[in-house]
Amino acid sequence: MPKFRLFAAALAGLIALLSASVHADTLVDNIQGISVDREGKVTRFTGIWIDNNGRIKQLLARGDKRPEHPAYVVDGKGEYVLPGLIDSHLHVMGIGFALLTLDLSDTTSLAEAQAKIKAYAAANPDHRWILGSGWNQEKWGLGRFPTAAEIDSVVPDRPVLLERADGHAQWANSAAMAAAGITAKTADVPAGHIERLPGSRQPAGVFVDGAVSLFDKVVPEPRPADRDLALAKAQQLLLSYGVTAAADMGTTIEDWQSFRRAGDSGGLRIRIMSYALGTKAMELIGGPGPTPWLYNDKLHMGGVKLYLDGALGSRGAWLKEPYSDDPKNTGLPRLTGDQLRNLMSRAALDHFQVAVHSIGDAANAEMLDAIDELSETYKGDRRWRIEHAQIVDPADIPRFGEHGIIASMQPTHQTSDRLMAEARLGPDRLGGAYAWRSIAAAGGHLAFGSDAPVEKPDPFAGIAAAISRTDANGEPFGGWMPQETVTRETALAAYTAGGAWAGFAEGRFGELKPGEWADFVIVDRDPLLASPEQIRATHVLQTWVGGEKFYEASAN
Image 1 (cartoon, one colour):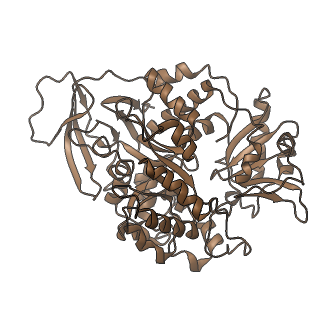
Image 2 (cartoon, helix red, strand yellow):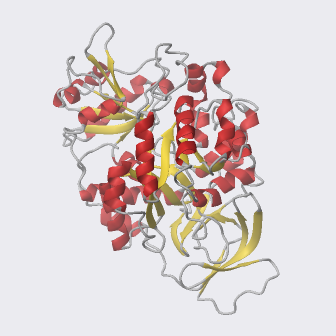
Image 3 (tube, helix red, strand yellow):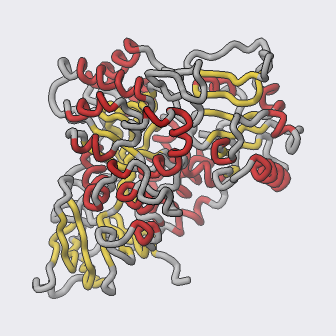
């Protein structure tokens, strides 16, 4: 997450935009309601009766008698109502900071990125550091990493530090490297890599995985007010996409304090299932065990996020065989097998749920081995999570059916990454790439998300990708490895009931049924009947959390 200093005077006004009605006995009627359980069983209804506490009192079918005197009646005008959507892997504060800093995610060439960097620096002369994110050399068709000199040509006078789209590399200019004291004598960092100029030890300007820590001591820290503004911005965006709950993967103690401030002041709108960034943060936040569910089930830290490898785009994903486009490289394991098991054991001992970032086939195999070993000691309902599980050796896929393993995956990664994946792996090693259907068929539990801000936190784009294996342009025709598509019901479940179960939140939210919180989204089409193109164009009309409306689309 970029670190910076911003003035946050706009925070109070932004929180006001998230205002909502007071809890009251409410009937939401004249709707086409849809809910789905983890097995994909669909329930349809035409009305929701919400009690004074914001929980569902009754689902009403067309012929059912309506309550006689509810405090409020909302006419759904025949629109479609779905459970509030759950993003099972994102970075809440990362989303907010991306909205407040330089965003390069829409750039399609190096020249376009340079122009945006130059314009942003000119528009913000008071920023001591220019910080941002979203660049992707693969999307630019560059065929290599960018260099410091290519930032120097547009901003030579101030440090510039820009995070890659996947969050696993930083692109710096010469001023940033000088501020951090990085020179040709700087040694490589464990579980990291410094790109060097050809034939030289001189840093080229890109720092991968662990090497990004070289800037930690010099980049200005955000103030609490900056963090609170970022959280408010992130919530506003998520609610506009119909996301009512999210698994925050990598919560720091500073993030947690911002969540708590929002909860204390009534500004926490979405539900956050927090996974602490490493065991140190886990101990600081949870102490002897997972926290209680706070603020009417809006906040809970029940697990820890660990990193086993890097990302495919920066060639940090740990592979069993070398990269096809980099034959001397098998990626960057960030932990040894013993370190991984020790950290997992430390968390499991106090009943924290374990979620481990594993992208390459070697990393996934190591995780499956570790889960198999630790399950002998740590019995009970552990719900081990593998985050991403992007590239899995087909021989390892059946192992996802053991020990209740959750495959927390992001469908739009497949559509964004397919050409890169082909280049990184070659045509003969794609059999276990983004293998949603195979993992589910083996008995693994799917929970879908976005990894925002890496991808947009748009669950409808994710559902469309999951059922078609095509991108927003309908490419490739017929879908990429279409044997790995899932049904509409499976995709919707992975964004609702499956996401809740993956965070030990079943019975609280995730489905629309009596006793659960009235978290729902009103949309303009039925995702179980619409085409992928239509699903991508879904318009979120309203978003409700706990029986309160927190978002309504503009009439324009």
